[in-house]
Length: 214
Figure 1 (spheres, rainbow, N blue to C red):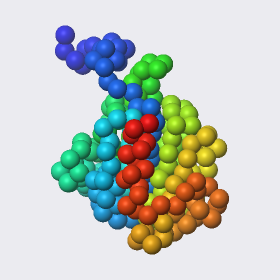
Figure 2: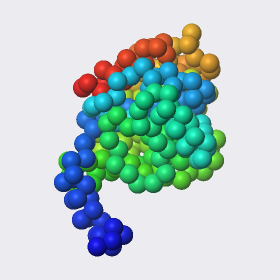
Figure 3: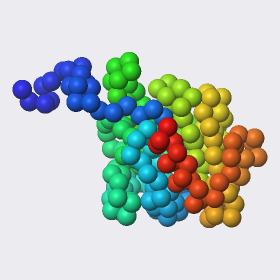
Figure 4: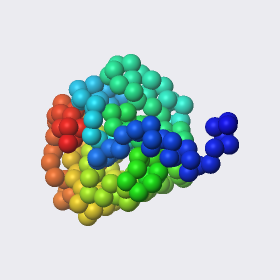
């Protein structure tokens, strides 16, 4: 039988039977400025072989986001992909969400593997892409979410996302001023009283590695 004729429920059951791993937690990276350098430093220094799924929100549009994912895969020795459609979200395989998209998480079945898909938004300047993504993630991961706010411009979206994660029992970390190209976003979250810790860039990879090990 051709794959496109298999009922959706059967495809999901087949995926579960193949042992698609379910992440224990989710880490969301807000990295609007200097995403290539930020993600290269963070993902290159982290061991992402287990535990946590990762979604990064760079200010990079479709197509260019794919090129960035290919570059990071080669430089960091891990599988990084642009989020272009519904897919399983597994530990150790970060996805990059293009600038004109948010993301939506769901379960294939209660307790089953986790899926993620892009959601088209308005222009990046007018959207609540990060907040909407965090709201969706809470429905699947509950309080097992970590939001990392890296270098970027301040926005209501970033602060609202941090508040949502905190109110749901998750944790929020921000990059420190000395290693940030633009410290506006981390500072806004810190000044709102929503940051659990302030980290230099070189400690963010270690944080991800600790999350991956549970």
